[in-house]
Length: 447
Image 1 (cartoon, rainbow, N blue to C red):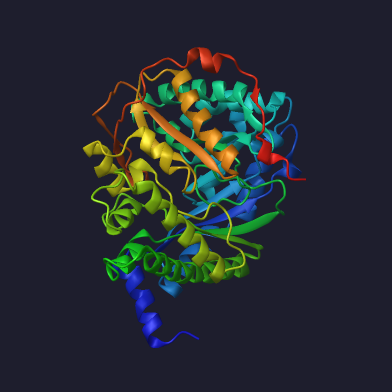
Image 2 (image 1 turned 60 degrees about the vertical axis):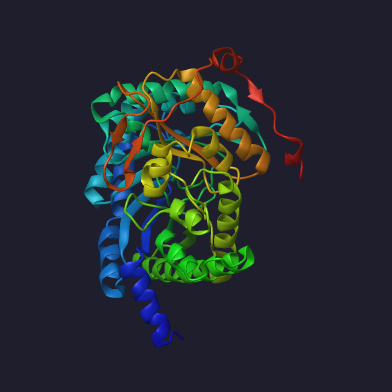
């Protein structure tokens, strides 16, 4: 039972420290819609099953006093339900209409799983991504190009660099915004509630309710009380704070599941920052004693933060899943933005940090003239980190048309703003042109 002190503490976390439920995401299986004519069937199914999602989220927000920033939908990877005579973009447009009808913020699942090989429909969908994202507002797309069990599909890695360039070109009037809704994964998970990478896995049921919680400001405030203390005290403080955050997420998830008559899936305890002051993962790391995020010591601090968050979460809920850890999206974290502007946080340092945190190179703006092969090579490097370390990694790069290093791009809202940072100028064309598949590492042999 909660006592008065705990209730007041939680209220302070919400009011003063920017604790929120980042998203309630309803996963919806589209498998019954497979085949020709899928677009209309998908629209009908999604709007029927998610009809009350936004209203229920708003009711819970009002009744419990807990901010719920986004309500979202994830669906079965669309390439799996695409009919032979169906145009993939027609399904993207149907998903966008469904998202608008239900009132959600985003819908994810315009996706393909091609870590070992790609079917004809997989390739049709991937090649349609630039047009789909340029013609829709709320649709998000993801492609899983690698896994620890399968290795890295370098043919698709090559293709994804070209897809990023074309998506940026088709949305050039919005500074390449389409690329902010496109992510390439290694080891993608089936129950991720966060966009742009959310999809409803084939191992899931008809529906599921997954909740993503975020509280960087809460963790930073907790660490302010243990200045100068040893790292084991810091880790214990983070763990206890993560426990409390996760319990709140579990409460909201179970309540949404009951009211929507949909099974509870997971709570994703990810420290997902926003551009707002006081809501930064970088500032947590700096609270540990770093002068600025990106300097020497940053990777060690991030490793401890990520691990302590997970330990606290699994103590609070038996259904922690998704990505669960610390996100480092450059444009969405005010501390990361400041560090990148100062030159402390570079692309190479961000890559090193992804070895120990959740996800990967996220929301990074690069020069608009960056070659497709260079984007593919960055993706290959990040996929390699995920494959060898048996963890989820991802790349969401935005080559901003017409802009170069030192200029800024503004996306607004949760997507934030970012300085355009440099990439290595050496050509990766010959490396990427080889194609084929980088085999799975020896540590994949666990059967």
